[in-house]
Every structure is written in C-alpha cells, then in structure tokens.
Length: 135
Image (cartoon, rainbow, N blue to C red; front, side, top):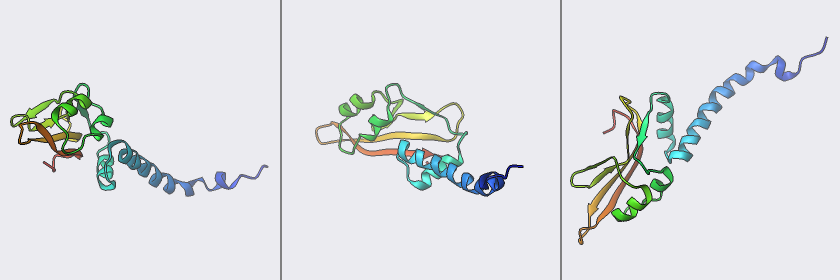
C-alpha cells in the first residue's frame, strides 16, 4: 500500500487559509478596480450578489478616475460623456444608478460649481459603494 503525502493526509488544515484568502483577494480586487479603501471594499464584499449598477453611455471607470477637482465640464464630457442625471441646474452629475430595485451599487457622481466666468468646474468627485444607510 502506497503511503499518502502530507497534503493528502492533512488537506483539512488548509481550509481556514482558503476561507480567509479568497475574501481578501476579492477585497483587493475591489480596491484596485474601484479605488475603494479596505473598509469600503469589505462592505462591497459583504453585499456581493445584491449589488447591481448601471452606468451612463460612454462612461468608463478609467476616465472617471482621471477627473480631478477644478476640471471644467467640457473636459469631463470629453472623458466620460453624458451623465444619467443632472440636478440643481447641472451642479450634480450622476454617472451611475442602481439597476432595477437594487439597494447597493457603485456610485459615481460629480459635484460641479460655476466659477466667476460661469464655467462649471468639478468641486468634488464621489466614488463610493452606495448603501441605503449612506445618503
């Protein structure tokens, strides 16, 4: 009879390692892809499967990451095209919304403010995992 290797005899010892490593890899993936911090990545991971996001036509995550406060509206448009919604005379541009009745989604919003010449400029970039508890 052939003797079993260490892994064949003790495979169950590696189960806790796998249970820990897979969620950490998924959290690292959301940190890299969406730019979230660790806590927000874990929050997104906790709601995995109940998250559903729709993005505006022409939107790209890479283009959104390049937007910085102070950019004008035309530059924003050239990078990520039309938003879904513009509220309060065009000062809030939403590029993502929940799909269907989903409560959790990846929020991508720009807050713009007109400068002295009346040109809309990015005041704040909102890139976060949206939950119903956070408004």
